[in-house]
Image 1 (tube, each protein chain N blue to C red):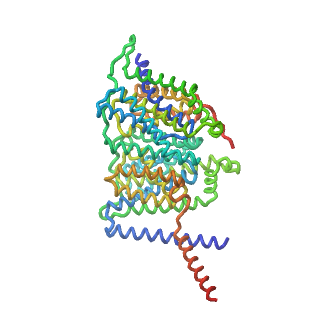
Image 2 (cartoon, rainbow over the protein chains, first blue to last red; image 1 turned 90 degrees about the horizontal axis):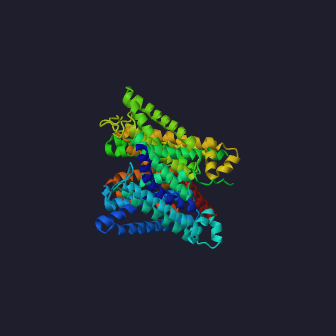
Image 3 (cartoon, chains in turn yellow, brown; image 1 turned 180 degrees about the vertical axis):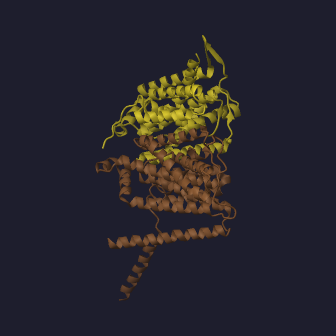
Length: 292
Length: 340
């Protein structure tokens, strides 16, 4: 029974990774950029929740949309200010990556300056114990799993059915051809950043629900792990990112329970290395052949 | 051909004299107490950062692969050499140079273990996988008994003392000088050109018969070796080390030095490593503003001059002198023909 409990806890944790991984995956699918600043968007989301709820004293139903909107806005601003020029000029991938790191360092240190480096306490939903027969779980775990599954379903519908979603798919397949078909690819890229950042904000809400604590550098490790989840599932694939997130969460929870609490990070990166050496395209990714 | 050889020969002599001159001046200033102990330590740190920056430049600038786990190799070198000098029981003047080599070799061994799977990948994936390895090295060293876990490993003896403040600086300066010369000659050698050809176009290089796997691994392992040596110097310069000193931020700091100086420019790395190290020591109180400033500079440089401030250009003092002399000579010639 304990084993099942750890699996469920892992799924709850994995939901957070999954939501953040979606953002990485979508952005990478369209502009082939590892948006290092994506992890820090979670941090922005967390602090927005904190400011709205703890400092302004407003209820949760104000804080959640505020956090999502602000993150989407920040994501779009980052794309416009830091990446667009490089994307237009078709700059080297290494420059994009370094710029992304610059944005991440900038966000972290400005928030450290504004709020101090000490962690802030935040509580989103009151925690309760839920009983299903002999199975016990925390209410936060249940909320995480339900929200993440709903978000993924909504995202799948958006990408596959809506006009902008189809434009996103076209741009990621072949941005040159998409342009010729009359798609405004810059708008699509901006929308992708906004959507990915909004997902990160939802991830931030779930994170605060699970660990009621926020810090300016919380996005670092969380972002990296979510990226591992995206690679594991196959970058560019939405169900893949979810699957990767859940696998990672379960692996982490089992490591914590049966091996060592301090070695979880090593296990996560070990999974990444194993995956990249065996099947770099990920569990559900497509193989891209290199052309001369 | 003959004149080119003669010219480079002359350049080598002038450069050697200049490097030796700078060394003697700094040494005299340190020994007479004009540069105090604290500043001597910073100067040694400058040398260490120069080694780190030029070694990362070998991979990022010359080979053209982004690596984000350089601090991991530094950690291996630092712990290996510190544990060696602490436990071997030889006098430090004997065990220290051996420990530096040992630290470098162990880091190189890690480089081989990491490089073989990592270098199969390219670009972003390589960056992430090296980052992952760097983190694993750090997390594992937190959990080992030999590294004293999360507690700092302290009591590492330094060769420098109150009476004799210069030995650490001498080691740092000379090691850095030797490594820079080594990398310069490497860049111009047959092997160096093979590595550069991989940066320019890996597929074309392979088609030309360059053993890309071998050369990529070679550059990666060599850089790891140099980072290990820098780690050993770092440990003995400060006396205590803990895994947190070698985290992702440290790797990023080294990368910033390389990027600002210019990816592919060794003199650029030397200048930016020196300037940034001194700047960050002197701006310690403003460290948060400093990081914000670094970030903004990093983004601006990437947006407007993606090859870094110096690009691939190398500063050469004899070259500048040569140009100056030629200009004066030309002007004289013009004046003479004008008279005639």
